[in-house]
Length: 118
Image (cartoon, rainbow, N blue to C red; front, side, top):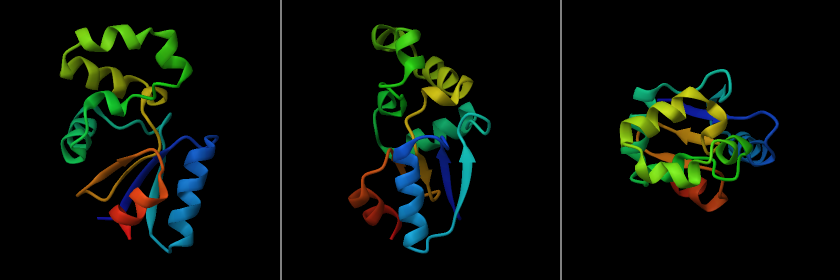
């Protein structure tokens, strides 16, 4: 499976991750997370593959996260509600979200990309 790369084009971290993938000669399909937001089912699959807590999928430093006061609300929401919320607005999702169908990374740390995709 080709790498799926969900990003926000104006995000500097996403630009660094994209540059790394290109520099390493790794093929990927880029999706604008604001217009091609993963569905609830896709997010559930990514969450299960990642082995990470669902809270890690939220862009906790984003304006939307703060506007909605999610810091105080997430603990009271079910997994299903959290996934539906993430699928409702790509700006709530930590980015870039990158997957090859076997593993998932959130954000960009070069060492994580080396281990996951090289």
